[in-house]
Image (tube, rainbow over all chains, first blue to last red; front, side):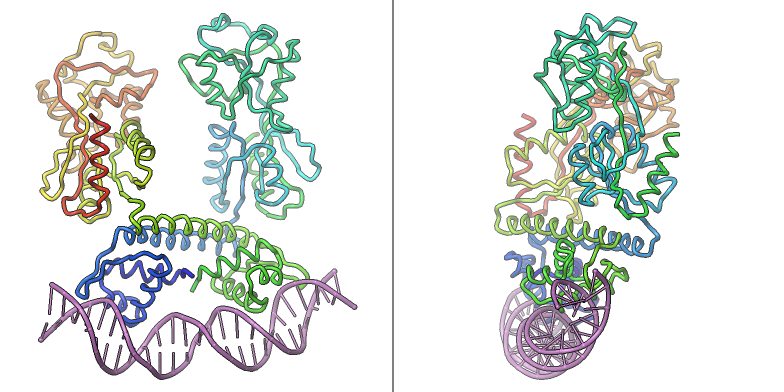
Length: 294
Length: 294
DNA sequence: TAAAAATACTCCATAGGTATTTTAT
DNA sequence: ATAAAATACCTATGGAGTATTTTTA
C-alpha cells in the first residue's frame, strides 16, 4: 500500500537527485531510503528515476509523480490546519448547496460578505438542484441549502431571502421588444416558452406555469434549459420567449431584451436547513444572512 | 506521522459509524482499527468521533476530515492512474506556461484541439509572465511556453504562432471614435497611454514604445495594467487610450471602441521550449500546433 | 579510484490478532 | 442482557540501521 511517508521521501529525493544527500537531509541512512523508493516504484509499477550508479534523473512519470506528491502533501498540510482549528472551535465549516440561479449575484455576495466579516466561518459550496439539496440536507451532506421554496418537508426549515418578479425575455426583433409599458402574459399564449427543466417539485417551473395560467393559457413547452444563460441564448436564437426572474436581466446579450409583466408572480429564493443539524455555524450563518438582506 | 491507511480506515469508519462493522468490512478485527483511529486523533490533536459505547457520531472536525480523506484518496487514485499510463508510454504529460493575453482565444482553442485529436496528451497549464516562463523553461518546471518573442536566450527555441497588428482602444466619446478610416498613432501624442507593466524584457511593452516612436513621440505612461480586460476598463473610465493587440477587441465594453491604425506594428505570440528537454511530447505538441496554425 | 547506489544481515518498533473487560442502553 | 468500544497482552512483519559489495564515470 502507498504511504504518505513514501510521497515525502520521494519528494526529497527528487529535489536532491541524490539518494545519499536526500537520506542525510531526512536524518536517515541511504539503504532504507533506496528501499522505500524501490517499494514505491513496485507499487506504482513504474520507474520514477533513471538510475546510473553515478547520478539519477527523474523519468517523465517521475516528474508527474513529483507534482502529485508535492500537491498532495501541501493540500493535506493546509487542510489538516483547518481541521485542527475546527476541532479547537476556532473555525467553523459550513457546507452550502445552491441552485444555479444564485451563482452570479447572491452567492458571491454572500461569500464575500462572510469572508470579510466572519473569517472564522469557512464555506464549502457545491451546486445542486433543489431536489438534490433537500436530500443532501436530510443526510447531512450539506448544512445549508439555497433553493426555491416551498418544500413539503417538515424536517427542513426555510427562510425566504429574496423575492423577484418574473419578467419576460424577448428577441430584440420581437414585435413587443420596443414597447415601454408592461406586457401582459396573455400576449404570449401562442409562443414557444423556454423553461427550466420540469423536475419533481420544481417551484421555479411551477411559477412559470402559474404565470401562464394568469395569462389564461397552458404553455407550449418544447425547449428547456438548466442554466439561465442557456435560456437567454435560446431566446437570442429566436427559439422562443422565456419568463425569467428579474436577476436574470443581468445577463446581457445584444440580441435580447427584458420587459416587465403586468401580471405579478414572484420567484422566491430561500435558505433551508435541517432542524436536527447541530452545527453551531448554521444559526450563525442564518443571522449573517439576515444582516445582509435587511 | 499521518498514514494513508489511516485516511482509508477513517473513511470506512465514518461511513459505517460503527467500529465493529467497519473492521469487518476492512477484513480486520476491531481493536487495531480503534487503535489506528485513536492514533490519528492524537496526531491531529482533534477528536473525530463523539463516542458513547453504544454508538458514535462524527464531530464537526470529523465531518471536515471526512471530506479531506475522501478527496485526497480519490485524487491520489486518479493521479496514480495517470502516472501509470505515463510510465507505460500510453500517455504524455506536458506542462505549459502561458501569458495572460492568450487565455481567451488561443489557449482554449489549443486545449480543445489537443483533447479532441490527441487524448493521449495530458496538458497541465499555468499562467506566468514571459520572464517567468523563460526561467521555468530553463529549470524544467514547464515544457512549453506561450509567450511574446524575441527572447535573447540561445538555449530556448521559439516558433512564432501568431502575428497581430496593434489597434487602438478608445472611449466611445473620444473625438476619433466615429472615424472610419485608420487613425495615425501621432494623433495620440498628447494622450495618456495605458500599457502593460514594463517588466524587464517585455516585448509587448516594447511593441507599444516602437509604435509611439513611429508616431513621433514618447508615450506618457502613468497607468499600467496586467490584464487586458483591466486595460479596457480603464479606457472605459476615460483614464486614457490604449494600444492593444487585435485579439483584445473580443472584449466588448459598451463604452469602448476599437480602431485600426495607419502604422503597422505587430505583436507576436510564440511557442518556446528548451532545446535540451527530452520529453517526447514536446515535439508532438509543436507539430500539433503547426497543424492548427496552417 | 572515488562516489554513489545496491545488497546482505540484524534488530526492534509497531500493526494487527486474540482474549477479556468495561460501559451504556 | 446485550451490543459495542476499550484494554491487555502476544506475535510477527517489515522499517531502519550497519557493514559490505557493486557499478560506472
